[in-house]
Image (tube, rainbow, N blue to C red):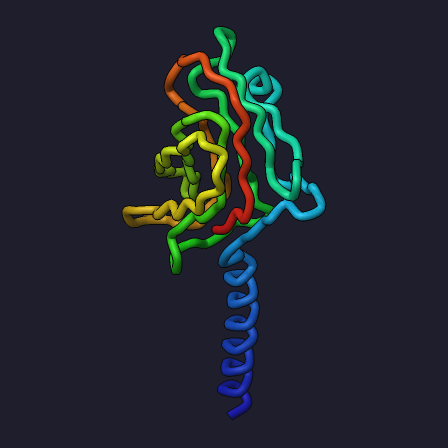
Length: 169
């Protein structure tokens, strides 16, 4: 009886510990930029020739200047504070507006080092729109980073301002 109780107690403790580890990977993330925080958002120094980030009116403001010195894969990246598991709702949602028509592309990178690619056309009329970007396919859906591109893969000279708000995973 004592041996069975010890095994049962050890099994319960193990389940609690493993359950705690599994739940450490967050299910969902949101950021509305209230207060001007740009935590988790960055542009590598060499990509700042194309993208300049700032906070403006409780939104992420992206100064977009694609010049002859820009490279086609310059990007903005989002690094969440913890891995975000979107398996239950494989969607990236955000509000976006722009002064220039552009293709906004997101590349979620998953914990197993795979990634996907989603394109969304931004009209360039300065009107806020909600973009629901569905992550398709199967496999690992634990996001460790997201790379974002404006007209990625092109060298078209272009400039404007893009704003993002209510970013949700």
